[in-house]
Image (cartoon, rainbow, N blue to C red; front, side, top):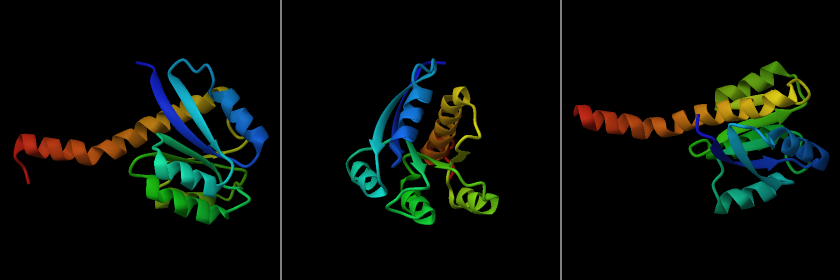
Length: 148
């Protein structure tokens, strides 16, 4: 597999957690993760207004927004980005609701091995790319087969 270059917007208000993400993602042989840090949802929206990211990696415990508002705000970017939620919560009912709304992945902090973290992000990115490109692929296939 060719090494991927993946742009990540990490929305995290805890600098120690942000540093951990950087550490987990460095030196992964299958992807170069270019990480931009936003310390709040407001700052993340500023970044998203001017740039595109392959992955939006968002903590649900932000000081400037409640978890439901964080998820609702990020759903607008599903057409261009994979949305991955990081949380300390193990409230399965709430997390399943986020999946039903369209979130691509949910990772519970402390419940995954650090060496598995970059693999999980890459797999989620690849799945999201398939979802994002599917309408265009279907349009091209229909045109090729002359199907309406």
